Every structure is written in structure tokens, then in C-alpha cells.
Image 1 (tube, helix red, strand yellow):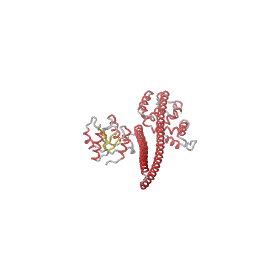
Image 2 (cartoon, rainbow, N blue to C red):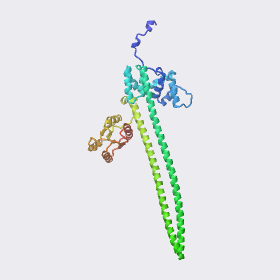
Image 3 (cartoon, helix red, strand yellow):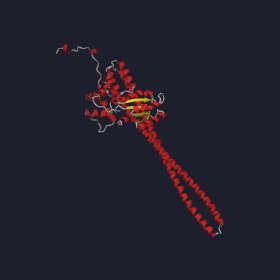
Image 4 (cartoon, rainbow, N blue to C red):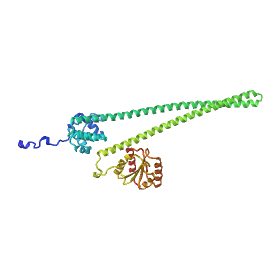
Length: 408
């Protein structure tokens, strides 16, 4: 082949720029990309599929992360596998960034995604975009780095607060146990004193009877009667003190019960918040990475309302379009009534007749609307689903619960 045939007919400046590969990105950015865009199970799967053997049989999460970061640019087969995995995972983000072709447009799209809380997919798309230069790469690297510090600070703050609460609970339980022990000891001492007083009183009463039989011990009998009165007063005082000690013991037990209830309520609240957080994360991941449902060739696991109509009473009117979208995505219809703020509360029976179930946020609904809904739902046997709060996470969790229940 001649040299003319081997020459490239297209000048270099006219060739389309190609996306960067993972191993072509600066090595100091691999830690941020891999740590943000790939989960630990995904890293383990990549290591296993590519025959990667680590130094330790049971490596820690940090050791796995460090090894993958170290080999991303040194082991070409592993780097290619990670690049393909990231492209598959963030296909939508890569396509979205491929529509822009200038450095400023890429930065503007990154800012827009960051404002919506989208980090992992846009980060991968930006780092591999051909228009990303070193300054933009450094800017995004710094923003993601500081974001990880902020998240870590929040987690550490929550852990410190939980440790303080646990210590306070242990201190209160110890204090209550010590107080109970003292009260039990005081009660035992009082009971022993009462037994002694009763025995002494019985002896005095027997002596009094003997003196009465003698008939010539009037003064002694009178003195014994006075002594008996004193002993009776002492006995009454001891019984009163014992009663107070028992009251204090009951009060201490009530305090313990209240503490247990408080701890259980806090634990239930923590579980509910974690559930809502997981639901919101699943929803966010679905919004970021999920495909169009109509174009999906396989059935999805999203809950299905089977065409049911949901009546949502109360809440914030600004959230209604979002709630209607969530219900629509689950094959349902949502109608809204503000609980009597602007809508006539007399419309509730008519709306409820068209609804298959009723939902309302317990923190943002009037008592009148709540009471009327409860009566109407019992009368017409309609599902009555309270929502823990007016946020989207609580609504999604309650909606999933309703979706799991087959329509009547």
C-alpha cells in the first residue's frame, strides 16, 4: 500500500472528539469516580469476574476500594470492565451530556444536575466528556470532595447524638435501679419495724388484759393505755411512711415504663425515617436511571394500583401535582380536597363515592375533615390510610402499602 493510501483524508481538527476512557482520566480522580459511582457489591462483582485476587482473604471495604482505584489505570482489562459497567449503569446521564459539546454547556448541565441532587451519573458523564478540560475537572472534583465531607459530617453528628442519648438512657436506668433498691430496702425496714411494733402492741395488750383481771393495777392499766396509744400512733406513722415508700416505688416504675415507651417510640420513628429514606432513594434512583416504562421489554417491579382512584385530603397544595404524578406512575388516579381550607367540606361525600381509597397526612388536615372521613369510610367500607407526615417520602411509603393491598 502506498503512502498516499495510508494517509488520513480527514484532518485532525475535523474528526469528532471521543469520550475519555477510565484509564485516560487523571489517576487522582479515580478515587472520587469509583467511590461515588460504583457500590461495594458492584466492585466485588467486578473483582470476581476479572479474577482479581487481593492480598487478604477477607479484605475490608476500604481495601477493596483502594485496590480497584490502584488497578483502574494499571490493569487494562479491569479498567475496560469498570468503564463498560459505568457506561451501562449511567447510560441516560451519558446520553444527556452527549447533547452538549462545549465546556460551558457541560458545566451548566452539571450545575443543574447537582442542584437536583444528581451526582453519580452526571459525574461519570462529565469526567468522560470530550469537552471537559482540566479546570472543569478540578472544579467538579473539588465539589464532589467537599460534598463527601459534608455527608460524613452529618453522619458523625447523628452518631454522636445517638451515643449521647444512649448514655443518658443508661444513666437514667441506673439511677432508677438504685432508687428502686433504696425504696425496697426502706420498705423492708419499715415492714420489719411494723412487725416489731405489732408484736410489742400484742404484748402490751396481753399485759393490759392481765392487769385488768388483777383489778388492783388501775394506774398501770392507765399508763399502758397511754403507751398503747403512743404505739398505735407510731404504727400509724410507720404505715403512712410505708405507703409513701410504695407510692415512690410505683412512681419510679411509671418513670421506667415511660422511658421504655419513649425509647420504643424513638426506635419506631427511626425505622420509619429509614424506610422513608430508602423509599425516597429508590424513587430518586428510578427517576435518574430507570428507563421509560412503555419502552421496557420486561415487566417492572413498581407497585401497581390497578387503576384505583385515590382521594387525598389535606396536605400542601403545592405538592399535589407531584403526588398525582406518583399515583399515575403506579397506574392510579389521585383526586385532591384541601380539607376545608378553600374547598367546601360538604364535597367530601361526593368525592369519596368516586374513590377506591382515602389517604390523608396526619400533620396537615383539619379535625373536622378527619372525623367526617373516618365516619364515611367506616360507613362505605373504604380503605382509610393515614400518612405519617405531608412529605413525599411518607406518601410514597403509604402508597406502596396501599399498592400491596389488592383492590376490593
